[in-house]
Length: 517
Image (tube, rainbow, N blue to C red; front, side):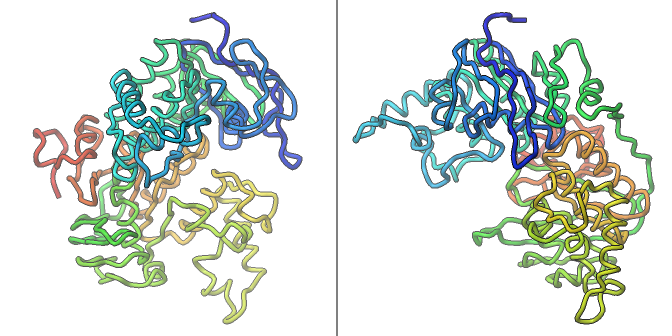
């Protein structure tokens, strides 16, 4: 391990918000030529610590050293000048502008007449050097998610960042794109760059990093050499107890079709086709996974299946009943419940409290309804039972849900949707951004619903999760289903990656467990 002077050293960092201590005396450093993974449950203080490093927050106490020199950042601009770059989960790019225009956003000292050719040449040189090929003149909106990430990384390299913070960088990538990213990271570290890698994917942490730092409840648990630990040990350090990583999914015989989708077409928000002739079914005692890179119609498909988006053509049936373009309330009454990706927008109402959010799918039914009025005694009783059953951590039933952590938001929403044992549950990215413990809880609930006879449609960008949980796996690209794999665990991940990139299963070499539906 490289023992040279750290590129970054953070000492005794403490940060408080409204009486809550987000970081308490945290030490953290990054050495030249290493990938240093940062792990912790939701709310453990990872984001706060990195936001301090990137100049978005100022610590209440503690010291920050860059290559041995003590500095104090008052803005991200200060951090960038010190050689620190950050690629956020949601890329900070302007969609309407070109690649080269995004490269220079926020730079000081630019001449009145921009040297466009010099900028393009520098982008091309960096692209070639790090294998991050993009067209400098392409508009951001024209690029795939993987290409946009390349631009975000190139932007940091263009600005001569020596320390790069990658926040959940593979969440929206195909397996091939993720591996390409790892190759780029390895090249960067071979040249002496330092990389902070934030991820909930333990296999990636184990395969890419040299050291791992774990935070729990704002405090430093420890820093360990990756080669001297295991993902089970890391998980135990994160949550304070042993975690079982393996997913137990007993084989079950599927029952009758619950949700049927026949040649469904739908438009996206901009009026262009988003779902093209989607055909599949989800049966009792079955989890049908849907894989695909973000933005390939998965969200729009689910919205059509719950009445939130118009079906342009095709049919939807629930338990053999025609439901095409039925109202969302009608889908709910037929036992189709929805866990959207947008927890605080679509799934929950941030300014409403826990009790109010718990009855959003039942406020018109007895016993919580008394005609035009609510039976608040029943409302509170239902909310308390829901919070207890699904292990939601909240100060009270009257706490606004905006104050809850991501994991508790997800538990509350999932519990609400599962409380009536629905016939079909549509879950979109249900474990996105969750820590190890919350992720395990959500996965266990999905499997339990399956065992109880329910049908589950699972949309996720975590391919490992999909393969482990799904009985069958549909792969989407540009709104079309490339094929359905009857035994996803037996199919090479490279095959799935090619399907995610747009190759129909029918055109690939015959593979075990694969059929086209």
